[in-house]
Length: 98
Image (cartoon, rainbow, N blue to C red; front, side, top):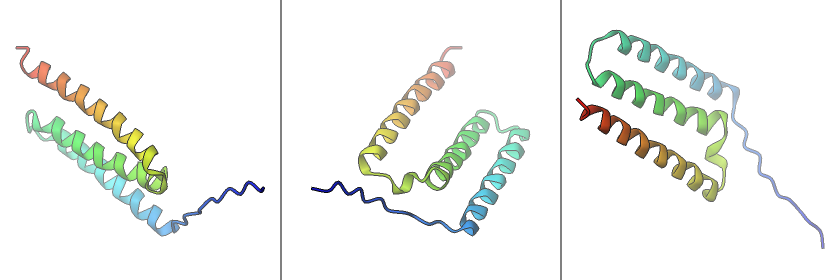
């Protein structure tokens, strides 16, 4: 009985990495620009949204999460959901603590 380990290789072209990197730079520029504009509480919401989009691209393309098993993706989703819940409670508590 032979133990065969079948590992799939996923080749991503360098050009796609460059486009993702340029997109990340653009989102960083947008974050810096928005931070200079007085939008009140929306500044934090926009910054967190842009950070979420950037983390999505880093996780999926640079860390190759889009090619992982569904169980591993479920663990990542659970961790992110827990983080989002704690973050939401923190902002909710902060907004009513005045």
